[in-house]
Length: 173
Image 1: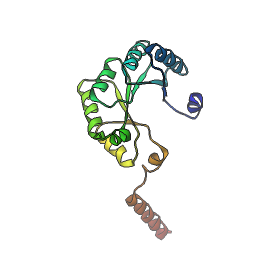
Image 2 (image 1 turned 90 degrees about the horizontal axis):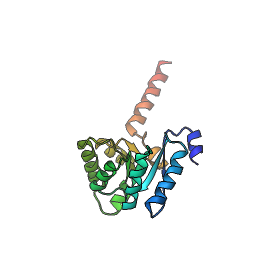
Image 3 (image 1 turned 120 degrees about the horizontal axis):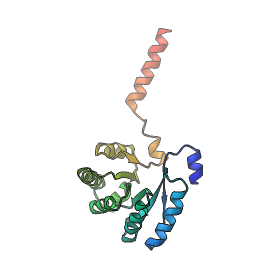
């Protein structure tokens, strides 16, 4: 699937590791990264074994995404082990009763204050408005389902303006 995604033009993909032990996660991560070291980021859950594995992989030059990050301290730990990204699940945070955008904003501000190169990858984004809200707090990277992505261009005002342009053009002819 990764090769197919690259053949279709994907510039980067994040591939998930599985395992309860850091050694197994490191082995899986190395195999996944070898598919295309410049375009694969290895996703590792933000659990103790995951942070240990992430540190080892990052030392080998493998790009790591710490996934299922739900706290500011987890974001800081991701930075400390050399992760390139943290994946936050906006919808799932809300489902858990957390103030998702406030929390993600705190993560972004904290990483920025620390001068961290870690980027936030927002996932579980459910509406176009959440995309706007994330951009407003400085989150520039997201993975979006088609039902959200396809609605990003929607605007009644734009539709009305485009219809008026067509009508005006027709009057000129």
